Amino acid sequence: MKITFLGAGSTVFVRNLIGDCMQVEALQGTEFALYDIDAERLKQSLRVLEGIREKLGAKATFTCHCGVAKRKDAMRGASFVINAVQIGGYEPTFKSDFSTPNKYDLRQTIGDTVGVGGIIRALRTIPVLEDFTRDMAEVCPDALFLNYTNPMAILSGYLQRYTPIKTVGLCHSVQVCSKNLMTRLHMEDYMEGRRETIFGINHMAWLVDIRDKDGNDLYPEIKRRIEAHEYEDDCGDLVRFDYIRRLGYYCTESSTHQAEYNPFYIKRNYPELLERYRIPLDDYIRRAHRNIDRWNDAYDALLRDPEPPARSREYASRIIEAMVTNVPYRIHGNVLNTGNLIDELPTEACVEVPILVDGMGLHPCKMGALPLQCAAMCRGRINMELLTIKAARTHSREDVYRAAMFDPHTAAELSIDDIRSVIDDLLADQQYMLPEYK
Image (tube, one colour):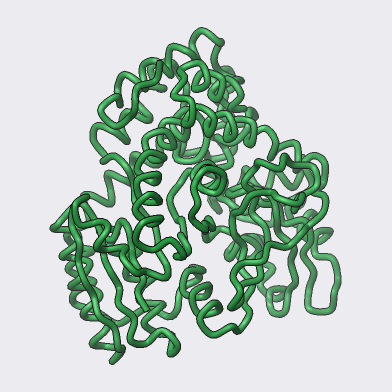
């Protein structure tokens, strides 16, 4: 079998996902085709994987494919294609995602999923993913495309609506959602055997039910501890705790992300909210800069210690194993809301729901209704996501404006005229990465 990894210069992520696969008995003998446009990073990933293979005694082969001209070779005959590309580099592209909106006092924390940062990231990424899927249709039409790239709902929703390739979007926030909540509220004694129900949209799937091993509802105790302030102020989760107070439920992605997903917490007229909820503005830029500065030391450490980590929480190897062995496994994934998997959300929306995986493929679960307030939070984001998808199809500047107009945080901070201006500036800044928007 052949598994292709697009964006294989992401060495740590490659180490985790392919390291997972090399630990699966049913996947021994697999060819892993590594693709990237950065030859040096590709070489580094290969060296790390070779060390892990030797340590595990795994039966695996690696081939490297660098540059667009080699992409079809990387994909040819693959059964699974894992996508983890990031389109645009730290400078000037990622910096522009933040510096341009900052001129309008429009502040972001991560800027990779929502807001004007998420919109421009989607518009520069979709053309590349379309190229990938055109190649796949030619050289591996039956392969499953496992998408890890953000903005998850926009990209996966676009691929599922407008390309012939089988696609599922994968994140890792569901796997740690209730664990993080329990740990931060010092409820570790309740973790063993707990049962949970989580669904919604990517980065905003809701923990609608959580029970202990005996079936007792844990939300009353969770809410009591939050009201009694039985947590540390520096726990990094004050926005999501406020969701529990105001909305009644916790959700999957971090408070740093959640702060920019709604109109409530980052507000120029209420600067005190940043301190109250410990909101780190421009956090993505700081992380990127730190990772770049520390990469050489991190790479040297990976080479010195090729010991593979325990099988990670990522779903990729679990999906592949379930499909190869026909032993069912349940994941959470991002798929279209076909058949009203979630009742109150649009059919065209990309939703995050439990999915049963077996030898016949992926079988999304119908979940019913979200609590109305949680559905309302999701719909605010879905409006922006669907309009961004439309803009990527039409290449209409007006459609890009409308996507930004219906982003909850952007609309709460800027006038319509300023929204149009910041979009004009971003399209001009990144025209080298984009088709023409007229």
